[in-house]
Length: 248
Image (cartoon, rainbow, N blue to C red):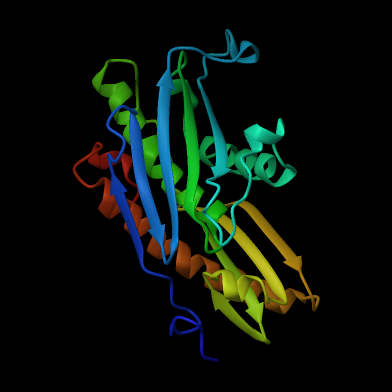
């Protein structure tokens, strides 16, 4: 099957992660995956939510949004509407869960790290790119906490990244772009850790239901893509955070 950009079925879109693009933030990166671009900033503050007081744990949370012209037509800002859409809330909760799941929060018991994920260009896979870039920005913010003496121990247990897989015209494809995502029979978003575990497996039969055999095939292909994304994360962070923090 010929893909719109000429990739093979199991080929990832080109991925780049540029660190330190927002100098005022404790951590930041611009992740580009094909035409999708997401700017992620990590802000560390010396405060925690009330429900975490006396627990000895810090907090990680996320916010997600798309710029008005991230898509082909202008989308009104959610702030102008006075409320966030259900999709926005779902995605930012996913990002927060993914990052909290791979971090030892007892290493920064008095701090909250907020990840702001702003989609500059949307060509599918924005939630997955936000998780992948979010982990990099978080690592950079934690390195800043360490430098400032506000961190103890090794906070990063595993890496986390997200990838999409889908069934388009009967064929399983890795890392769908918008043209493929919008016509897919099945759309599966997978957030996984470098230790081989899953944070979320979010699959939907848009047209034709899928069976267990197809699900296993899609998960195996997703793992291949995740391994490449973890490698991209390692390259981006090399020399920027303690080497032992970056899973091999």
